[in-house]
Image 1: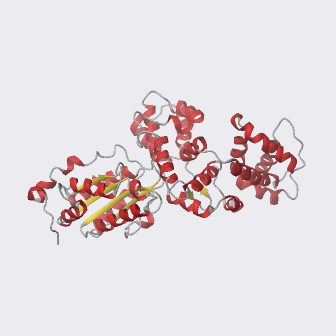
Image 2: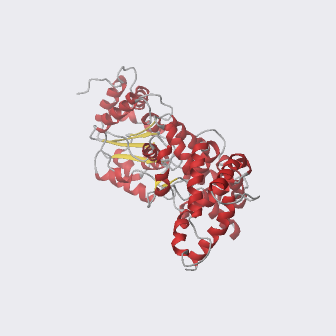
Length: 450
């Protein structure tokens, strides 16, 4: 039984009558999330006390979806004024989060804010609480702090009449709560059509066919990540055409995708940096960073065959992989390859280079792959082509990296080693490029005309 007294014993209707003014604004634009919104609203309406987790990488639209749920007409009719939005983005510990929650509920001057808040929520017929940006509390290297967060969520989840929604970076919902949508908690990127609709809604549709083509390339280049699409659309309002923005992407990648303000919602780099900082604050984060740096060089994903050859170069590569998946910095593809979203990949390439030992290991692996391909179209072509074709995109990306001017000093020693480790004679052209220039185009030509 609750023994805490509400502030001045104000009746519940009056106490929460001003709560709507405390809610965040409706999402300005939410394209491509109709299915997810419908499914979550249905869970809320069909069962009292649904537990909803909205997970995914930074910039994927978790907060926007949570806000859309808050303002959904069916949800609003169901819980009326008893809707609350608790952002823990700047919160340092659970005690601070509990104090903030109590304040939202009109409670002050108590030494046990969480217990008081729970009593207030239990007194309501139905209510909905969104806890936004939970990663700032959940992804803690302090085991005690993470346990406190788990208990905090469990106590809220034990309120039968409360619908609890959390948003957090990561791929899996926090432990200790039976989540109603556990199998569908992680958000993916939006479709190209939805990305175009977003651009059109914010900046207007391009008038020229060439600009439509440039827009498609631009949106695809950022993997239709909602934050990147939104910020690019805002940049288009400054008289930047899609073709101009595409050119800036080719030259600057993620560094130019920002608007005024240094915040997760106004800068792609800022948003990605939050995830990397969280990763590096965890035990094993350094190894995770090293593996992430390797993945960044492989646009078609780190395939299992290459992954297996890296085992001896990590203390525990599987633990590093699990950490990256948990933080939603990589995803696991249909063939178990590790993939990265384009904005994250380019950010890591710029700010988190590979170590010299990992670069050397990757060089040996990919030179061996290139060397296993066919040089001539003969009876062995089809068999040998299969060795190279799945890795063509990765080979192309990695070899281009090695011959970039900024990497020539690093790659010159590798070229010398390559030449002394094989029977290729040095020349003005890097041996790896010369070899693949012969083999890879023939491979693709043969596969396309087989």
